[in-house]
Amino acid sequence: MSRPTVPVAQVDAFADRPFTGNPAAVCLLPAARSDAWMQAVAGEMNLAETAFLIRRSDGYDLRWFTPEVEVDLCGHATLASAHLLWERGDVPPGGAIRFETRSGRLTCERSAPGGGEDDARIRDAWIWMDFPATPAEALPAGEAGSELTAVLSAALGATPLWVGRSRFDLLVEVASEAEVLALGPDPKRVAAIDARGLIVTAPSDRAGCDFVSRFFAPGVGVPEDPVTGSAHCSLAPFWSARLGRPELVGYQASARGGTVRTELRGDRVRLGGRAVTVLTGELLDEPGAAGAE
Image (tube, rainbow, N blue to C red; front, side):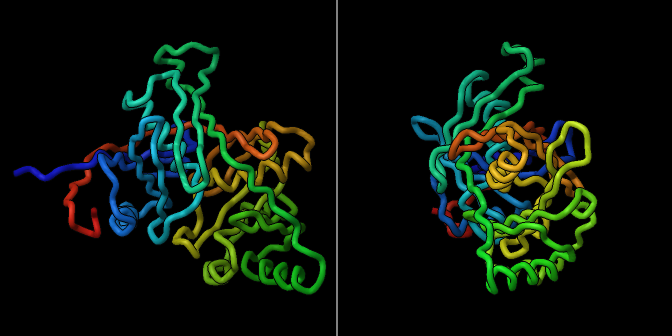
């Protein structure tokens, strides 16, 4: 008797060519699975995030797992999920996709250059995700703020100009793009900081880009994330306030690198990016194994 299978793909998100951007695994589940089973699969995939999708009448349930924990919000695995659903034909080319998540409803749409829905334009389409803004509030003045700034300086090997705390992360501004590129943080010190991760940012020196960033989250199993959509939910309000414009372009300057377009809309942020599927296959599914329901 053949074993049941679950469709799975690896998608490079915030990328316009393979082997750049941020890889995510996407599993299309026929029915619910236990948390333990999904965590085991995410560990097996060993990527920054693995997304799990279950179809519902008005969209999809979506959950995200790192190799170690479930997270409340993930941009690149959402982008990867939407890209795969359109590519497979599970959603009409011009249709929006609604995801129900631990951060509420997230909507994805495609914007093809020049309009229209022919194949060539769809391949060049940007995917726009509607996410909650997570603005960072500046650390309070005084001893507590100074102490954390000193901890961050030691962990990052760079001097923060500004530090704030968002819903998930600490946002750290440094003086220049060169400082962002040169960072070599101490993973143990970063993991000991009370936050999901550290977003480090500076104004960009490159043409067509407003700011650069890097993201470190060793405490949740991601030493450095290649391109972090959810971090831009904090970066967008921060840089929009600094630069006086709602629409910006960010570049996450990891080894793989990736571009994220942002548009601040009140308490929401639209994040724009592209994606490329690099691998498709089947996960052998054994109900009862690894905590499956």
